[in-house]
Image 1 (cartoon, rainbow, N blue to C red):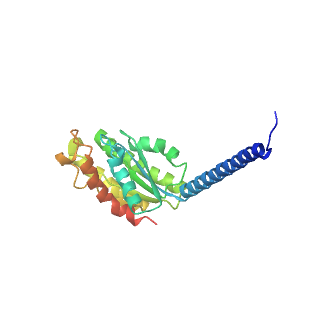
Image 2: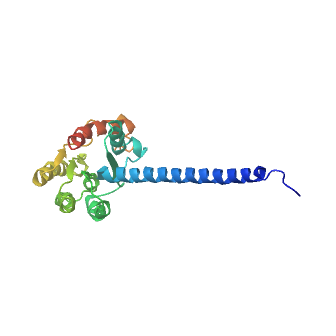
Image 3: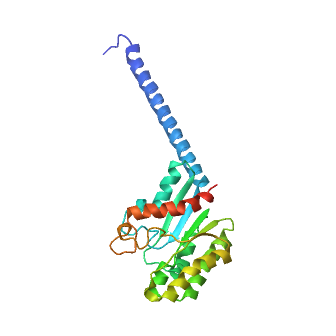
Length: 230
């Protein structure tokens, strides 16, 4: 068998090598692009500041989609403003201040730039000693400050119905301004302002806000968070 024109054989082979080289180059370029994107994403994540909401079922947005709770709404507002913050929802249903002390270390593995402390409501509903609740709130604040002195701390005040007696309810309410003053932290006087006790803004249990209720709670807390943004 004779080949009249050897070039007719070698040209396609050369073309194959060329195509292979181009394909390889394109893959290398694509890989490089992905590496650059990945590196930038890691840099962005490293540069992001953190807002940690540390609380109970109110923070966890019990009964509704967490994105519609006040912590989730905070992230949405942050994103809409183009701010480089991420929100961590550290809410746990049924949590007491003692439970909060116990699980805090896990959340402090990385620095929160803003720490919103929302605990105590379950203490009040269970009739836990006022002195115990106050001690635990101060201990949580101390632990955050000991590890991250620059973290800005916001304490969400809470009130309870007089089921345990009017004196207990009054003393419970007084815990929060007392702790805020003693520890020099920002105080939200009452987290559930204009929501607590209003039937249509709470789920059937009468304790946890609806989506509309959380929107109001968010508007209550946002000014305090906004003041601490950098």
